[in-house]
Length: 398
Image 1 (cartoon, rainbow, N blue to C red):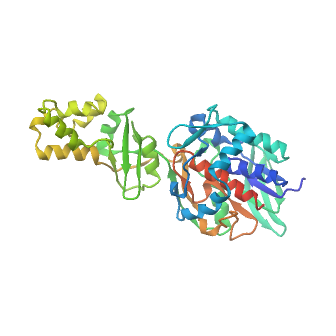
Image 2 (tube, one colour):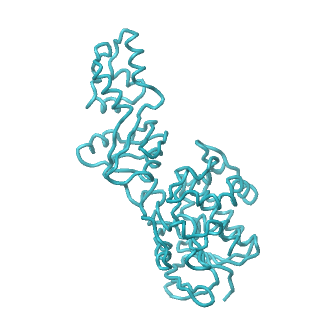
Image 3 (cartoon, helix red, strand yellow):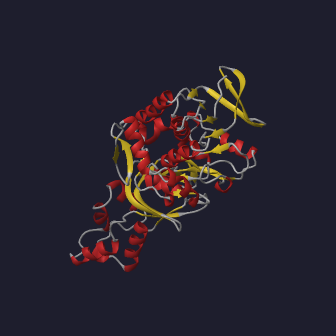
């Protein structure tokens, strides 16, 4: 059996970067992955196109008990480092789609994964696929890892272990809470986990109203007392989705409500005033038709006086229309769960990890990176930037 400097469990973004960067430093690692190929989540990300970083990444784009924890990691590996890495080793140029989101010009996530498999081969790193790690035990010499492969159980040892097994989304990709379980075993505190960047559900008396609008996308400002996002929302048969909803979901808990401004680029009061100045012959519905689909206006007509001519609109009616459009209140029943979530929020508390190396403060030689840690990025490539940076930081220390 070969001697390894470290065994990395989980061949996602963080684990792959960690193995390659360790290889650049002349170290020998073994990367163990339960799936039959590495980078399963990378391959489906961004609709198979992989939004691999974000030009505007800062610690403000992350949800955590302590976002400042990211400063030490992000100072070691920047967005520029990510861009240069893929250009240099994969001849992959990034193109910005929107809001700083970078995708490979080829629009193929598999090109991103191929960079890592090539570099692992070139630097002599080993990878075991279709191998399920079942336990990690501390020994005098380091760690003993129990695993199952081809129906057989076996063990392997290494002085250091890196846990980059991700979070609970998405089960069909082999998602598990293994890193969380191992963290608990080594006495780490866990921030409560929940699905994040996830569609939200509406039930009860309003369910049919939302369902009637399924497929309608509206550019909106979605906000609560913590945060605000201006992007599209999408009405669905079960509630709400779309980028702005996925974003706010990371700042929402069951029982809470948030507000949607359905027309953030205009002020309805001003639009109504302009119509009045032009004799106000048009109806509220006709005015709204300038900005929304007919289906949307018909649905709004269930609680707004859309047939009323603007000239005869009372102050109270004008306020009702304005408030309904600019301050549309939503109280979701729940979310669509881990299988529809992009990421998991919560995880291993950052205070118990070394901010420079991500080594456990509870157990020397044990490292955690990626989604299992209490660092959750916004939609738009931020979670990948955290994963690449974490992989780099860990590799410097193993």
